[in-house]
Length: 325
Length: 309
Image 1 (cartoon, rainbow over the protein chains, first blue to last red):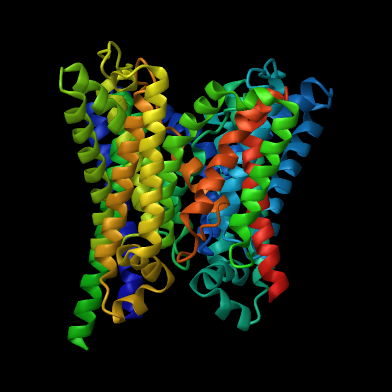
Image 2 (cartoon, each protein chain N blue to C red):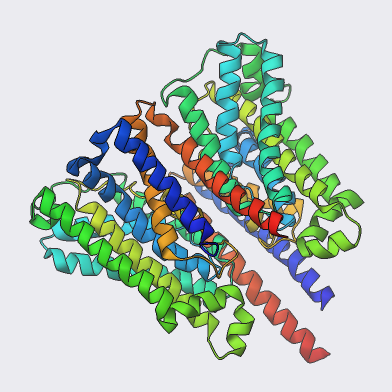
């Protein structure tokens, strides 16, 4: 049974891959300038922030947790970065470093409430979702925004390397490879799945469950800080509503990529496929002169179809396994 | 007292806030101000009650904000097409019931995780509505629609009366009707409930239907307060409702909590905004304080359980 369940999960990834190829083929016929190198880079450029958040959401969902606060934390980091640079006159590098530290601190707040008091992640991060966004709004009084960042900083979000490669795509690539190596190639990374599969079992097996959970949430917070920097550099301004709804997009990508929301199963490449599927859908529809709302409708439909398909497939495989046994 | 520690402590916090307001800002208690605060809280209360029952059954629904918007816009469009208000209201409630039933179908019949199902329907309905209306407000509503054609004060009072009656019925039904206890049973242990002869899948389905219906009623009671209907209405309502339920002592792991706690939670969170105005604080702090209240409530809970064990 183990074997068939496992093959059903890689089968769903295969289906996702086929869906992505299908999407690309369709849009290269319907869309103007869709199948070009520049557009590929543009899609990657626009999906970097969501991609980063989805990457770090993966280990959290693998442990059976969830983090609703990453989008709000992105917003808070963005405006604190602007505040430090403009009002406190920090050098830009120091401000950027402090932004990452603030992100980590936000993640640590979630982590300590979740691990020390055994509170459900959904509720803790719902609280910090409100708290972080609220702080961002309170600090800017809802109107202030920060602009006129130096060109050297904006390069991070608007610059291109030789060959037309956007700078942040390199960041996304490095992050993808490192998270993939962490989750799939190290014993350390496997512990996330062990915790999600059975946190008590992991504890009895001698895993430091609380430390691993803390790491997952702090990592998410830090990367939310990084995503804030890239966001500010790309858009050229920091406002309190930066990253609104990003948490839901990141979770959607992870779940679409085949991770179970209950934890225990899922892969990083699945998440990346999920991110790609959503990003291609959005850009492809725009280039095909279709209304942008269609992307959202199809995203929801795709999510439901993927989940229903997956569960029906699993049931089918289990029944067949029972018969052949 | 000890059994309902959470409910009482939230009620005590609310009481304290009200006493401070009574001393420093008696203007808060002027009839008009109080009615306006209450009528802002009422839609959240109705949705939060439905949400509480869903959470007690160990499910969750993040699509209520989108359902709310669809029901509001539908009701507005129908009365503009010269439907009688009662017929339009019935149609909107039917729509809410159908939207809830769809969530219930995916969760109960296919066994999909409710948070993902409702995340998908949340995005789909919101974007579908935006596609249909292109962000346009529903304007030129007939005069018989606003405040049900009663004028502001009688209108506000009748909204209040409807919601109080509905709330009392729900609180009573959840505690004393067997249907209400079914929600607790499947939330505590669905397998045990099944062995005891209940049908967890059907109960789960009906719980979502109930939330859909309550969301539609909330949407109606909200829509009649304004001269036009914003298609973006209800954005973030899912989070306010879940937050109020959790602050009011509904355990996210299912099977625990009651609607009186939810009432205290809704009122506490709803008073923050107006209270800030009376304390002359910048109103932008509202969201941050609500977040702090949620965290404080769950932290206190976690701390207490830790000390007991």
